[in-house]
Length: 296
Image 1 (spheres, rainbow, N blue to C red):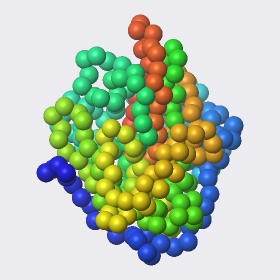
Image 2: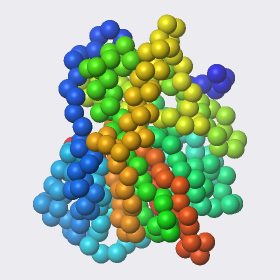
Image 3: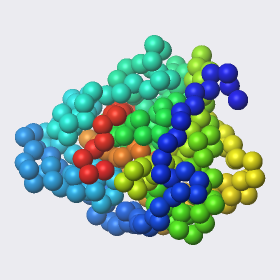
Image 4: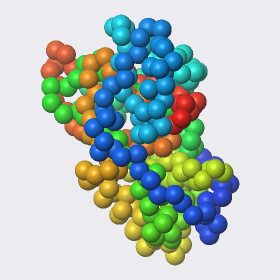
């Protein structure tokens, strides 16, 4: 494990052996209404705002369009002000480096050293905030400037819903995913040699499940002694649901002018590989916030 590993203490009611009985639910990702964009006027009405909040309450994500065309930065600022999200958050891995802008450009770029943003390859399930502790980045916003020619759909995964099911059906497997050192995430950005260790899930004082589930080339899993089989069973269920079309996963296109807002501490997300038009490459702009979105 890296000498730069950062560990956070996990103090919660959901530690091994003391979990309360979960309520198993899913935000019904296969509901067609989930992907219909909510249109906001320049001066959003109470009804428009309520529609956005209701979508977040139902699905933990919402697509939004503005009634008047604006640039990406202006759109993200407008949404942050409208829903009181505060200033964008710059993750630990980006600070004092060339990725330290409060907004991140996501597009294929041979001159960029960012291993995730600058490629047309698919992205595995993850939460934003590679080196941040669970729950630091609460809300993510993705604004689409241009689509790819083909592919590039955003994948949203209700990892918390699957975990809640595990708590009911296989408590030892769920316990293994709550362990404070089970998931290590490490940076692959050139010049960044840090990693962070923490739980994959957490259950807060109100019984709500929070998520840090990420499973790709920047992750290592560390089962506790004697819990190897428990962790493997839990990961098998999560990986199966993350790869299947069902109520826990949805794959959706993000269209030009649309912004996807989602609860980063409640959902994992990924991306399909894509093919670009070199003259008009796929381009998304991302903002992260430490403030939870209303009702998320």
